Amino acid sequence: MEHENKVGRKRFNSQMLLAPAALVILYVFFSIFGRNFWSVYTAKTILEASYCIGFMAFGVTFVIITGGIDLSIGTVMICSAMVGGVAYTRWGWPLGWALTIIPLVGLVFGVGNGLMVAKLKLPPFIATLGTMLVSQGFGAIVSNVQSQNFPTVGTENGWFKTMFYRYNQFPIGAAYLLAAFLIAMFVLNKTRFGRYTYAIGSNEEAVRLSGVSVDRWKILIYALCGLFAGAAGIFFASTYTTILPGTGNGQELNAIAGVVIGGTSMSGGIGTMTGTLIGAFLMSVLKTGLMSMGLQGHFQTFFIGFVVILAVLLDIYRSRKSKK
Image (cartoon, rainbow, N blue to C red):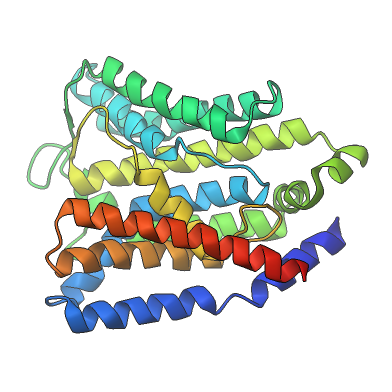
C-alpha cells in the first residue's frame, strides 16, 4: 500500500505545475480584459470568494482520493447555515451556540453519506445526490421557507462579521482558510487517516484483505467531508449575511472542479491539498474575473460549467497518460 501511495504522489508531481500555470494565465488574462481587476480590492475579493470553495474542496478531496464523490456539499453548506440562522433568530440561542451547530449539521449529513456508501453499498453518486435533495429540503422545512439573517457590523453581535469575514478591511477569513489547509494537509500526509485514504483509492480490495475495516474509514472520510461543508456554512453566512432557503445547488461544482484541476484524480489514489488550494483559488479568480468583465450570472454559470467539463477531461487525460 505504501508503494502505491508513493506511485500516486509521483504521478501527481509530474502534473503539479499545471494548476499554478493555469492560475497565473487566468489572472493575467482578466488583468488585461477585466475592469480594475489588477487591484488590491480585487485581490481581497478573490480571497473572500475562496472561503466557501476552499473549505468544501478540502473536505471533498479526501472523498475523491478514495474514488468517491460528494455532490451534497453545496446544499449541506447552505442547510447548515440555515439551521444556525434559525437557532439564532427563532430559537433564541446565543450566537456562539448557533455557530457551533452549523458544522455539526454538516457532520451529521457526512456520517449519513458514509453509512449509505459503506454499509448500504450505494454508489457515492446516488447516495450523495439523495443527500443533496434531502439537505436542500430540510433547510427549507426548518426555516419554514424563510430567509435567515446573521448579524452585520454595527448591530448586536456584530463581531460575527469581523471575526469570520473582514476585520478593518483585512480578509480575516483567509487566516481560517490557511489554518484549515494546514490541518487538512497534515491529516492527509502525516496520519493513518491519510494513508488509508490513499490506499482505499489505490486498491480498496487489497486494503480490505489486509484486515483494515474499509467501511469504518469510509464513514470517517465522508464525515470529515461533511464537517468541512458545515464549516463552510459559517463563512457563507459571514460573507452574504442573508441565507436563502432552497439554494446551494451548483456550489459543489466549484469545489469539485477546483479539486480536479488541482491534480486529484477522480479514479482515486492521487491528490494533494496543495493542488486543491491552488484549484480553489483558480475557481475564485474565474468567478471574480468574469464579474470584472461585466458578464451576467447566466454567463458565469455557462463558463464555470465549461471549466467543470474541462477539469473532467483533464483528469481522464492524466489517468490515461499515467497508465502508459
